[in-house]
Image (cartoon, rainbow, N blue to C red; front, top):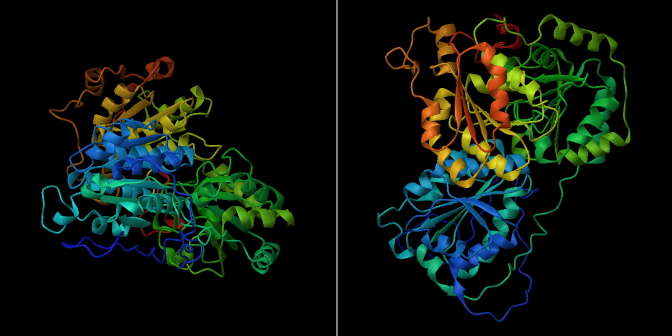
Length: 599
């Protein structure tokens, strides 16, 4: 079911799980021997119809799918299914849509494409899900088995292409395997460290007649929960007792484990300051007295200093990535390191841990909360308070519109309740800095991959997942244009995403680096044409029958955002800001907390 395609395929064979995927809870686990399942006497159906029925059994009620020659059978079956099919205007938009749906809801996002260019257009969205551990199932059509390896029209080896960026993949060569493959795909996408799973189905397999049946595989061997050892828990507790300057550093693993409530109890009962990664935003309320907010290249001064000056750093569901640590050799050098993660491959990968614990975050937090160890840490908290007071996030107010002001205004007018989905660039950092997040799954961003074009389609998926929420895509003019065609999906499907384009006519983050490190020399980072803003996003939105407004003056920001929020359906707000602002603080790449730039 998943060996690399060959011209004359061998008998179906199930691919082994990646050794470092963390998906089986215990590396090397395999499904138990199939148990007998009752067979129903039904008329034979096509393999494509069977696959869609299997999706229905998994609870799929919505998917993003773009048809083509090798997936037409799936779409014919979907036309008779209760599953809602959202037709993106580009397969990448569909992949990001499924990605945003999964991030907002915690459920598995599903997308589908045809072979060849349809499948390759999904690659960026799949890689994004892999980097950020987002559960997705991707179904692709493939050329008939007899043509595999023959350079047939629209044939690509999508199994080979995606191997480094999926948690697991299946090439289905026997129509009878479909129920088991779909059951395993959904389980693997959500077990252990979540991630994307690819199912590639040749057209002749889709067309073959088969009797419908339930999945036969038993997944009990996969589903052993990864629990923390009591001795390890007590050792962790003992290290906290011995510390004088502890710091909690938490990431997206807390969200994946649904452990935010237990995290708060842990921090409060142990009196621990908490900093988060970008993907961990909302896991701990940012207005809580113990909150340091987020750390890293553009994170808060107090968060970066606390993580680096502490004597005990407790990392849970975070991976010590370079945007957090800078030069990892000089990160938290005075601290003992405790690293808790569901994926054993993460322990000691980037930073050597004094205590590494492979387990589920929710499990260990519950155990730690049974015997809290409260200490005052008066001197430490006093120091943190001084850092917060001396170097808060700030910008110098100006009579012109500033991006930070727009985000602050949005925060006030939405009372901090909106789901924010940025693109990637300066606007992404300002959204994270000036909109405060107090619950998980409220800030949805492309973290590990940093993919421009993420914002609009991911916001589309988030709004479909949580229809009653206010979902705002904060974007930049460069990032917004990369998937601007999804305005068509928003209108056609009636998806009420609000879009704010912080339009500075530059590829702002790269231009900021040019300013800081390349003598302000511009290397293809200016987006203006003939000295004027280009293109007219409001006019483009109008072409898609979506209302919009230009905002040129600071006095118009509040009424414009109010109009956007009050208007039913999607809305584009094109806010014109001059390129003058830098995202600060900033730790240069490879730097340390002591090289932080504040002005």
